[in-house]
Length: 173
Image (cartoon, rainbow, N blue to C red; front, side, top):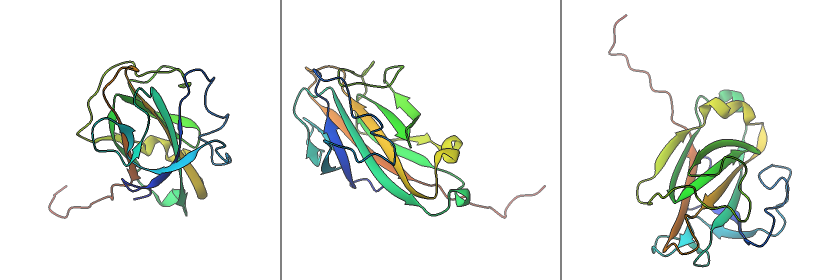
């Protein structure tokens, strides 16, 4: 795996009165000013979060660098994520997956567009985006989104890895 389930990430809790995250926050070149460090999962209210954010948080922006020696050697890339209520994921600054996220880039005042309860991680195939990877440092950025400020909970538990190609010999042509 490139990013383990309980890895340490940089994170920034949204201030709804603010404009949004620092420009380029999900790019490898960014120093992520204002971000803190915390262990995934992120959230509140359901006893499954290592890094607690304040109750009523509408969005949390997280980013994690990971190394890829040679992107041409990869056959797959999978995001596995448990979330409540939505998220938008970026690979080196490009939007690659979203559920219940706004159509544009989330800002500090963004909320999830629908409800989703955590409890079963879902997998998203990022293989079509392998061309976004570069040798060396890469960044996975994710915005976790809550349905409302009055929500009783929020969850964001991401992982990033590959599924190896398995060849079977019990077939005929």
